[in-house]
Image (cartoon, rainbow, N blue to C red; front, side, top):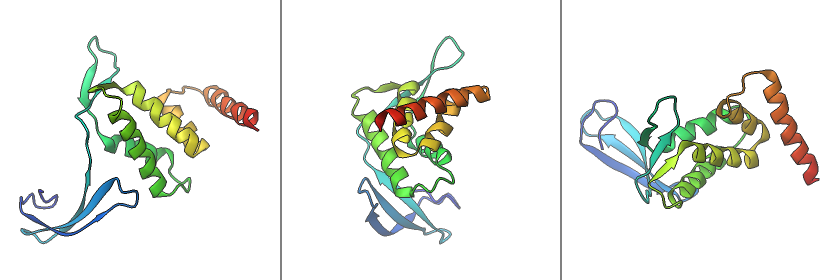
Amino acid sequence: MRCPFCACDTTQVKDSRPTEDNTSIRRRRQCEGCGARFTTFERVQLREITVIKSGGGSEPRREPFDRAKIEQSVALACRKRGVAQERLDQLVSGIQRQIETLGESEVPSQVIGEMVMEGLRQLDAVAYIRFASVYRDFGEAKDFEAFAGQIRDAAETKR
């Protein structure tokens, strides 16, 4: 593992333990070059997945699946919402598992976006609206109002 501080290729694992949800292994490493310590995570990857991005061009872009992008989006949507980090990790791990078990090597970004939307809908209504506002590209306040109204109506129907 290359050191993120000095780029030395020689690091030593000082501690390994499973994460709380047992979906990855957390390793504390120390660089033998500069002595810096850093953390890495090891996760199971069932297959290589390519995300098909929709765009304005004639040919859709393709890029490797990146779990960190989902983690970042979910964290941003849940910012200052009091949602425990463990629950965010479980949500992202669940989405990654769903993607990997689709059995496809290429997955459209819209499918991933809908999975994130559904996960956030069940986790936190405000985070769900925040994510939807970016994902669905709300342009005006009335877009928020209409979407929030749909959520409110659905909640009232469940009662």
